[in-house]
Structures are given as structure tokens and as C-alpha cells.
Length: 364
Image (cartoon, helix red, strand yellow):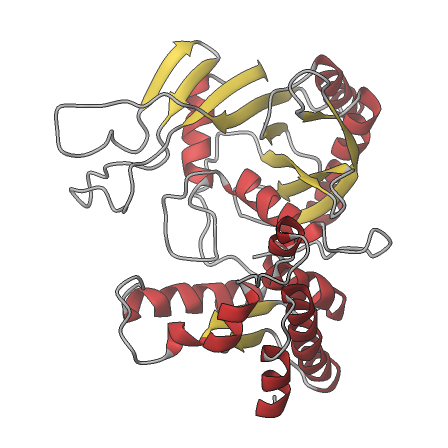
């Protein structure tokens, strides 16, 4: 890119105009590479002065809330998605030689960068969970929700991790409704039925057989209408083993008599179907807690389950390790919901008439 083109963008006073101009500039370069070269991944280096201006709003911006919503990274990934080449965005300050206290060490940055490129370029997972031969082949489905750009429509965002091998696919659901009392999104029976049918159809297309067990992770509670829709989809396909699990934030914190937080994997049970799980915490292998901030646990509630709460939490701990965007093996959320969240962030910028990419590599 020409320096003059960058300077022209930097001189724009309105943040919305800066973001759109920057996206168009990068998009044209990405399009040229995708159409004229054989590339696996396009690495975009964001100049430091441009990044600072793209993430700041000036006093002349009319609607600060709307401007802050206009995210460069999300808009660029959504705009370039139809080209069929994953993007890896890198800040210039991340790869220069200046030491910045808030940054990771060079080795960690290199591991994270190469891991992401390996996954995006090879379209294969760098690691996966250990296969349990005596456990029924499971299909893990994560359901999250995102708002449209205008804020008027709540749509479902579904991320499906096929199995323990990490093969996954992204599906976009239909608009959801909001509960009048708690303002939480939910699906009616038909919407839940169609969403799970589409997920199982993709599973069958990829692996040539139906799973013996389906686990659904949801970022809010399950309504009776949703459970009825999911059950109808599974009953039609003779899938008898099912677990519907709600994973949400919780204000409860646990303390012990040491200088460290509770161990990763600590579970406080309220009932046989309800508990608080620490997915991040003290790790025996390291003899420490490898984090900067006090870890927040998650609440795990099983609404309809054939597995015990302990078994479901053990699976959740395994799925927190399945984020291939970095080498951190103790994420807070399982990849089912982490993926659904990231998909929703970008999906709101994808045109409703456009068919979104199904690979997680286009959203991370």
C-alpha cells in the first residue's frame, strides 16, 4: 500500500469514514491477492498510527455509541469473507523490535502466530481431544445470540464443533424473539427444530453418519419450546442420548487458604443438575495460576441430560482447550460458545443475502 493512501485516511476527521476507508483500502489489496495468487492466508499488518485513529473517536463524531460499534477488524473480515481466504490481522507494534511491557514475550507471540496460521492455512486442527473408544460419538453444538447492526433484530448464531476431532462448521440461524420480562433472546419450537436439523444435516454431510449423542451448549437458559424443538429433531433421527447445558456468568466466587485461586476444574454443586465450575485457576503442573486477573467461574445447568453434571463439566474443561487462535490451553468458555460469540461479532456485518463461510478460521 502506498504511504499517500494511508495518509489520506489518517487525515479524515470522522471515525466512521476512517474505518470504512481503511476497510476498502485493505479489501482491494486482499481481493487482488485472492484473485491473482494462490494463497492460503492473507496476513494484514495494521500500522500503529492507523490503528490508534481507528480505535479513537473525535469530538466531531455525531453518535459516539454507533461509531464505537463500527469495528475495523469485524467489518474487514465480513467484507472479505466472500473471497474465500482467511485473514490474519497483526498490529505493527506486535512485530516490531520495541519492547512493550503489556505485550507477551517473543516466544509466546511466535507460538500464537504460527498456531493460528497453521489452523487457517492448513484447514486442520493443531491438536484435538483424546478419543474415548467406549464413549458414544458425540456432536457438540453451541448456540449464541447476536444483535443486528440496527439493534432491532436479534439473530441466532450457531457454532457447531462436529466431534472430539475438532471438525466444525458455522451456521447462521433465524431471527430470535426477546423475552418481555428479562429481555433474553429465545427460539420458538419451530426455530429450534430447524436450527438443530440444519446442524445435524451438516454433521451427516461431513462424516457420513449421524452422531450417537448430541450435546447443546447455550449461553442462556433453555425454554420449554426450545427443548421441544430440539427433542423433535433428535427423535426424528433416532438419536436417543442428549444433553442440554446452559453456560452463563455467575457472581459466586470461591476462596481457599492459599495465595492462589481455586484449582482449574473445581466444581461447586448446588444440585445434581446445577453447579459452578472454575475453567481457569491454579494448575498443579505449573504449581501456579497462569493468569493476570482473578478467574471468574461459570454456572453450568443441565436442563435435560443423560450424562451426570460431573461428566458434562469434564467435557466443558476439554472443550476450553480447543481454541486454535492461540496456545493458551485454559480458556474460560468451551469452544462451542467461544466460537458462537466470535461468529456473532462478525456475522452482524455479513449481508443477510450472503452465504457466510462455514469454517471458524474466517471468524477468529
